[in-house]
Image: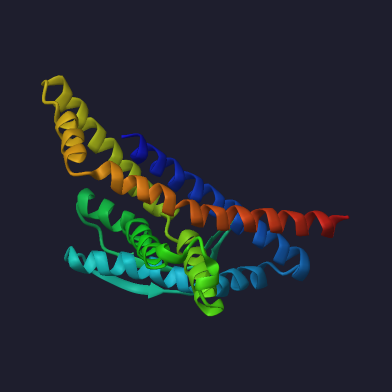
Length: 227
């Protein structure tokens, strides 16, 4: 189960690095333009493809689960000190479907990153076999999805509610000596899940490398700018 734990850590690092990177880009653009609204619209334009995928993930998942959606937007909205680059209004439903809809961008985002990396796997360590345009598309997709696939603040509330209820159910089952987690882990081991997550661990080092490279680059630029 160590590979599943490593994958969870990688997702957490990708989430944190995406927040740091977005913040650095915002600071750099604002320091150049001195325009808050202009900075927001620049970010909206920069991350527009990822935002579209993010909101469509909510919309399609809700539609599949027979939950109504309306007012899907891909334009930024400023609310005090917070900024929403996109949104989709989903009607209230039970907490299970709400949680699935909330997590949809992350699940679909991970699937897209995995599919892209699987496509490039034979040549990923031999860039001479990949054309320039393929390399640019490869990096662009990973950059977009890796920095827009995580839950928003509103989704975090739904996710936390789901995790609290799910954890409570597991505790109750444990108290009644129903070892459902043990059965689940045994099932994972029997179905070669460890090898699957081992590959995912290697795959997700790539978007992490991209994010940390950009973070280093932007920090260097800002350091030079201040001097």
